[in-house]
Length: 63
Image (cartoon, rainbow, N blue to C red):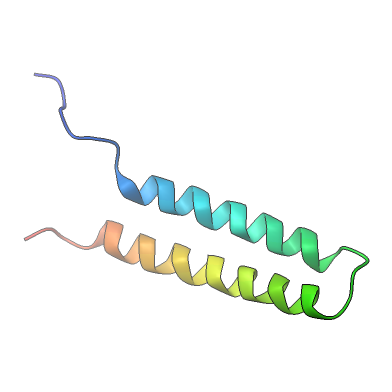
């Protein structure tokens, strides 16, 4: 019997975290200063937190 489950949402969250991380690193190495560096660090920290929480919930046993 084929699987009828829809695509798992944690994959979309992990892709979003990777995109946010890459954008944050790209902004961090850009020649712009000031608020751009703050936004870059917020994106990087947010991406790491999103990935950690996503993996935590993806690995948690279902009850």
